Image 1 (spheres, one colour):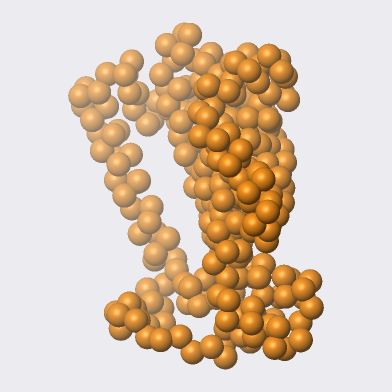
Image 2: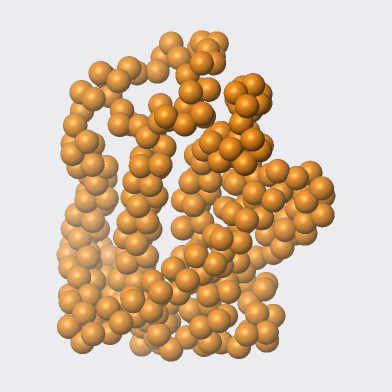
Length: 286
């Protein structure tokens, strides 16, 4: 048990009105996790069934919105040709590289600003100004700097990922309960021990929230990057399909983006449960 967990257990927080209406662990465990997962997929499944029925009934034009069955056939055809898996792999590598670079930069800057008011005064204003610039406005300048190769695409992904992680890391550090820090001083923890055992664990929920936002932003940035001068990737596949009015392929790429987003969010939730098992809102009872 870390000092953060010990400190959290020794501080008695006042009961709020939310405590009186919060369901207890027994009530939450009355529904199995498998049933909850099945329930979460009910609405998307119904939507697909309605979509298929409308398309088969002629209410949706194939040129406007093809049936899911047609999109599925396009997926099998592209997969058998090797095109789909190749483009998917390229996009995943770009997203992973950009996420790693941008995540590391955002986390480092967040720690620096979170612990230092001087650092906040020096760099936070500039970071917020850059964050407010849309991707499309930066794209021409990035192309001039880096061309239309892999560096441009990874750079845009890294840029988009940096800000959510930076903001949430800074916020998480600033929101650590001062009473816990005071208790750490009383227990004789050094500055490094205080950071490692109390401050960073206390900031972790906010950091992981930033990771979830950054995962979504990474794909948004990648879509923008792959629409310009790309020769591979899901964005290139969609743009190439647009030239030939292949709406089934365009819809397929959109569905793949959605499925990747769901998978990334599931990974982020798994990390929350693993890294925040000590937290009452992220433990096994969740």
